[in-house]
Length: 94
Image (cartoon, rainbow, N blue to C red; front, side, top):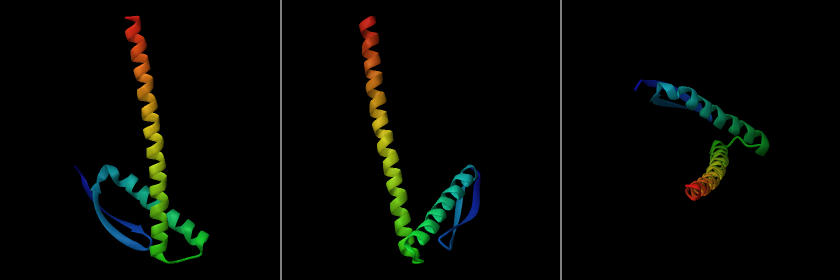
């Protein structure tokens, strides 16, 4: 457990964090993605209101996460059903 102190800037605010050293790249990538979305929405909606930009960004990223989770869940169910069918076929052969 190698803790690292870093500072992440999101929407013009600095957030100090203590993280695991092996998570640094992922955390910095996450902050970059958030800031990129905020910049995109500043242009798209013509606003500099940080609260609005953060709310829209949070909504968009959560929607993206829920879609991925739903797809993953559906894929998992399909894989489980396929495994059950294969198992049944193996039992018939035995």
